[in-house]
Length: 228
Image (cartoon, rainbow, N blue to C red; front, side):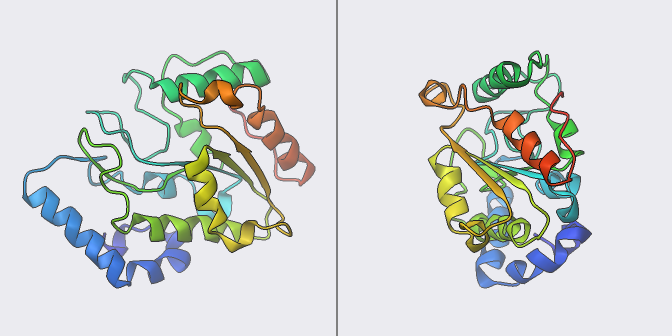
């Protein structure tokens, strides 16, 4: 990944990570995979979309995903989101169900969550690429250090933000960030993942959207309009 592709607002926090051997190895791995004719999602140009669409100083809410979607046309750089015209994945359907239960917002007919990012919702996956048809294939290749640094940069801010940690994977990632301890100015909300395998174990009924908005309003940051 070239430094030139890094959004300006994130540079101070993330450029040091890009200079590490681990990050350079990640860039070499991705280039070699593409040279071998392998398909990687999302395509070049949108892999940093979460950071580009939500500048660091604008972040109000962080939602952590695990991997980009690994089917054709699905991944566009935002966790849980798919472009308009692409079938809505099961986890996102469950997010919409909880949104309707929590705030009375009817499920959208599309899965593009860009409207959230424009209001300060950082939709960040743990790994920012994946091989076509192979979930988790780019885990432990170096993305974790990069996205850990992004989460830590938000946690280091004195502006109160909300971290929505859905599932054990997101919760373990946040646990690595020192700024999310008991003395943190941020609100950390944990629940099971919205996947069909776990949504009924506590994601449904967790009211993350109204809880986030109540905290943001109480801290003078303004509520998110969760309609998409």
